[in-house]
Length: 92
Image (cartoon, rainbow, N blue to C red; front, top):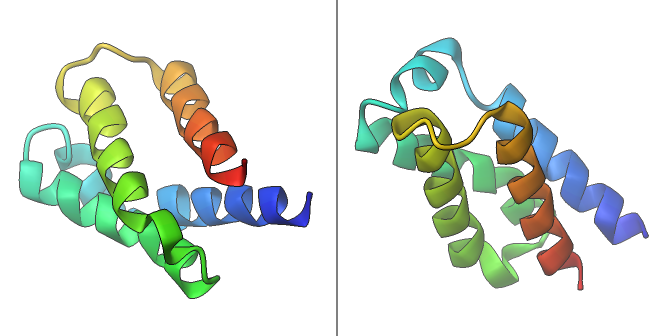
């Protein structure tokens, strides 16, 4: 259960604290900004030793955020649900 809480905290820190307004506004228009955001998102996971599936985490984050920010196929809730599904996969 502690691992799940750590994964959730890493997600929240990476997705909110490490993303500035500029990246949040431009990641839907600029692939480079989306990739930078996704790599920065993974930093807390790396710091807490959860690097065993870092590539999966980065790629899934790029795909989910592109579906939301670039293609407008997801809303905020759907975006977050998919991120938490990824966290549950990492937890298992």
